[in-house]
Length: 319
Ligand code: XMP
Image 1 (cartoon, rainbow, N blue to C red):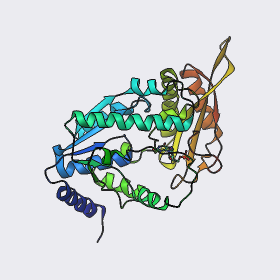
Image 2 (image 1 turned 90 degrees about the vertical axis):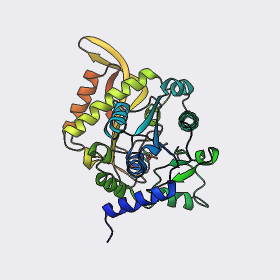
Image 3 (image 1 turned 90 degrees about the horizontal axis):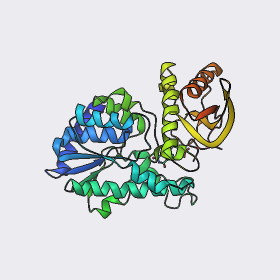
Image 4 (image 1 turned 60 degrees about the vertical axis):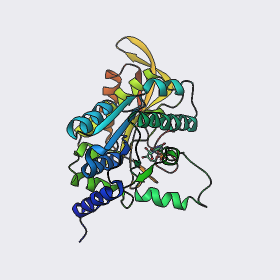
């Protein structure tokens, strides 16, 4: 009979057979899929695995530290942590078009990943957190819709370029099964139950031009919002929640001084697959508390609005 424990054991055996004594490299993003892939492959082949975490400087508050300490210190996995924030923010300077942002980040990501892979002496296999829905989607895209709403970036193209085989142990799984496998592997609930986070990170939550200063402001607001969601016990009943920093300044008053600062939009949605979504009906009192905290604690924001758009017609992200 089929259990997650037997699935794990089967996969570990398959990975050992596929890889033999060769080396595997795995891109870590901090998300559920790549975390589960890394831990599973590490159980199978230990030190033959090297993980590469490319930090584009557009992660949430504390996220990079969390990823590095979990994988390097807790799991003792070979981990390369490349802080490439200057490179990414430099390349994004002046870029305002959402698709150009995605393409700029996607291309740089592959360049940096390839550089780091070479620096550790290369590998024979690339591990990817491809899920069943990704497998179906890429098939149905032949003759599928010709309009791309958003180009999602991943490391597609890299295996051919670097002449590597692929290790994709999650190809038969849906997202909730990946979470169950993560729990089976003993991954902490903080990682397993994580809301989805887009590859381009905060870049697509800062409409208009991205600067390090704006990213820092957004990180603070986002952290307060998520902390309040956790305190209210709502994190696990929401598909995804995040703050967006708008390129609009409005007038406010603090004490007896006039302020002229950014507007922050907060968003939360429920969804089963990300394809459609309903905005989350927070109590007004909760929204008021979040707004007060963000405005009082984050310099640079003086107004907070709540996004009540569902998908369609809106998308989940603002860009
Ligand atoms: P949208 O905004 O298209 O988002 O309604 C649907 C889901 O996909 C995530 N998303 C992305 N994930 N790269 C990613 O890896 C991207 O460029 C990207 N754009 C959106 C979004 O966070 C949501 O979960």
